[in-house]
Length: 113
Image (cartoon, rainbow, N blue to C red; front, side, top):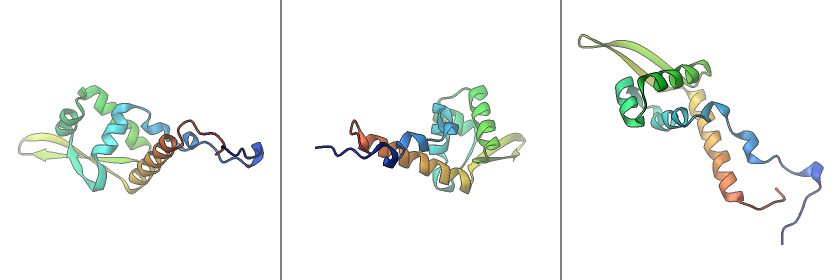
C-alpha cells in the first residue's frame, strides 16, 4: 500500500536534482572517464568515448565553462597535446547527478515521495 503525503509535504522528485550539464551523452561519458582525479589526453578521450574531435571539443568547452573540468595544453615530444581533468566541483556535481539517477531508478513507478 502506498501512503500518499499531502501535496505540500511531498519531497521534490529526484529528477529536479539532475544537472543539465550532463544531459549530453558525451559530457556524461567524459565525466565518468575522468573519475578519481584521472587526467587523460584529448586523443585518448576521443578514442575511449568514440567521439569526433569536434564533439569532444564542444563537450570539454561546455564542462570547462561550468567549472567541471580543466584542460591544459602542452607538448608530448614535438606534438601539441591537451590533457583534461575533472575539478573537485565537477566530481561533486557528477556524484550528485549519479545519486539522483540512482534514486530515480530505485523509486521506479512508486508515488508518494
